[in-house]
Image (tube, rainbow, N blue to C red; front, side):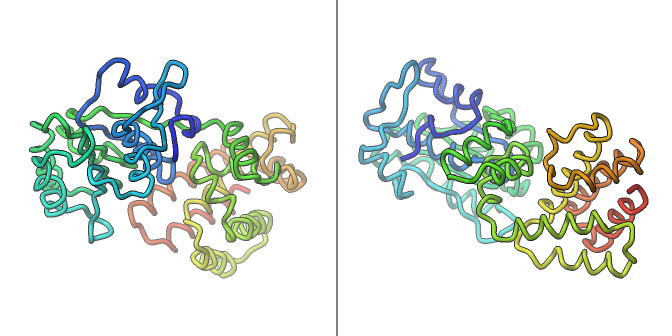
Length: 335
């Protein structure tokens, strides 16, 4: 059974949730805002367990769910009658019927066994405006026993009226050293691989775990590095073929772009310091040196900006091949 102590690197958020007992400051609704795979569901589960626990334990100045009572075991198995996980049939949308049927229709029914009735909604940013307005009616006058946890990757997509009625808890990037130590100590990932995964995860511990066990990650990394080393000598047709290869992997394209971005951050760092000790791609220092020597600071920064723009365009569903072709031509021009 997971406890607050198992939450890695989110000290401020964790302290806030643990202080609820001490300060008697429980809100009826929370927005937990953080990147995909950053651990929002894990945190929501621990918080729900703590609220419903039949005999919470004191660990120093804070309280933890015991992990052994009937309630804790039910939550661990995701079958607690008073912890409701909101589902939605349409993958890209949480509609008004989802909110009315799963929250509004049952919120007036008192908890079956626990002190609280807890609703956990993942991907809250996918709520339509109509769905949010339906939820607003419950948020305006919630029963005393109700706690609604809205997990989102972008709280700004929620209506201001929703945000104003919730306690907003923003997750922070976890330091690379903390992520690396977690991968090595808890998951027994080798030192060199833990360092690379931590660098690519950019403070997202869930993403670091996914990369550490991804069969595609090492292959995609090697293909990306090969492309970067040879892009100056490649024809447009070869670049187009490389673009098509990206789609063959299960890894998200944003992860591919992160690999390119970290390479160019290494180039920028090496150009500024001439020191290989802090590079992620230490084994590629000779190639990084060559790119650093022939590139200007402005050119490297333009590439890094283009990578960020490409991610934004792809998030907005701009044509994949066109976006990637423009990006790789910018790289070719500035390498």
